[in-house]
Length: 226
Image (cartoon, rainbow, N blue to C red; front, side):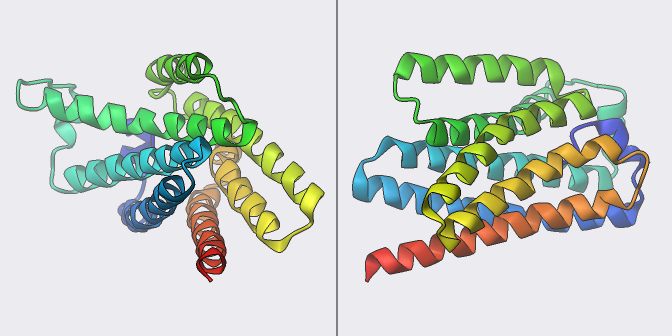
């Protein structure tokens, strides 16, 4: 996800189109995953599925924010972002856009809650609150924002790996690899400026991870229906 606007301006148009297509597909895949989480919550009334639903719903919103931004830049509205011209009509758009960007952190917090098995509501909302505050103060810093996102995802990667190690099931391995892909998408930002080829590779890893997770969850859901 392109979180720093100046970085977007320096990207070639071809890459912007590529990232827009990948994130548009990401919206669909993340929304489908969130829907499966919602269905699981309705069937089992297990709260962890509710936070799983929240996580991927927030993630789809963050993808949507970036797709909208790329379209606006393509249509010639870049001056509003460069000059920060917060007119009465533009200001709400900025607010919604920035909230959707920060939603990616809320997504990863939701997933961390799922796998860490935190149950007390006061701890959960405190977790959300401080993550949102950190997101507000870091989303303008491309590297810092991605590193904090990677930090949150590292907990999910660790939990899913432990579950795989305990069960040795292929589905658990696939889930672990899917979250590892999301982690690498953010973590590889560290070497992005030294190797520009990392840019498209990051987005390919992101989409591959999301598709792998969706396919795995559909298989699990199909088996449970039988």
